[in-house]
Length: 412
Image (cartoon, rainbow, N blue to C red; front, side, top):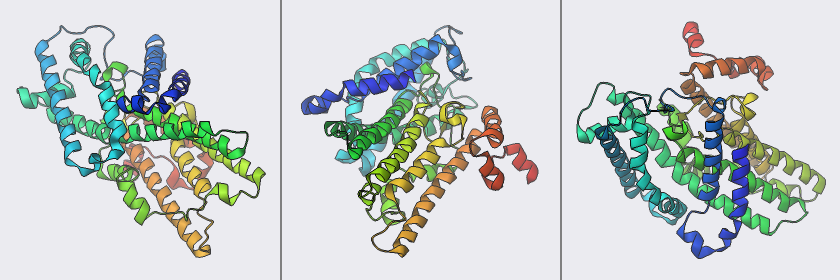
């Protein structure tokens, strides 16, 4: 919550930057609230150790081995090879050649000076890494030689983790920049009427969500005990996640899952201001819940990865509160059951939105299978079966209940 407060205050503080077009084009202004969130949470977790659950691959509080400059050099080679592959991918795919990703290139230019600290960090971490051998060392061995047994698994984890970061970080930096632009624009027209207030709070909710998304992908390092522990192991898990994001969703949403007729709730309810206010409040409740779900990850938000198990915040009440809130809000925002083209079109729109909801159900299931490799998640999910907010729904529809992998194996 302190990190959230710091992020919101700094987002407010950089609002004047939004009007300075020349300055805004030189640096990525949203980096300021991102750094505020990282510093507040990292310092709090360092001061109060019970706020985090250290991973087996983290860093020891003090040196556990002497410094080996050759190991550091191999890790630097691994990082250089990784960044070369990422740069090659950005150069190769036309998706990254348009103006859409300009905020991401600004983000990279803004953080570029920090690269001088990388050798210092690698040297410091070399004496404190708890694992005998890490991903950068294994990947760097492809250039420097000295490969060992087990390197294949480390390299696979390394490449999959960087694929996640290389795909999602550009999107989140672009979305965050756009959402702040919309937020500052809404603040300029705020009044006591329903819709201006709604616009400010709606964009603020999504700005908070995206702020913690950028933080999560940017802070995936051992320094903060927030490294990627494992990545989604199945093709199905990757497919159902990636189809929900650009550039894939622009095709899927336009040609296959276009579930609205450009009739939205505010116009639909314009003649009934009181109902409009209640309807908008419900949307804001769902949007703010969704934002709090992302903020609950702290420094560890990421799609398709395992970076620790969350059991607090909105996750105290449901295993998938973010998906529930997001999908429910779409029904209220787009009102697919209302169509100017008649009842048949409305029914079709409802079916298409239900199919999109089904995609998120599949995402939830693939994530559960992945996280079930961690006994902490198994214990948490089984507890949710009996105490979660939707436990009665699970009892009525047993296929919604979580089943541990051992239980599934026994039933088969």
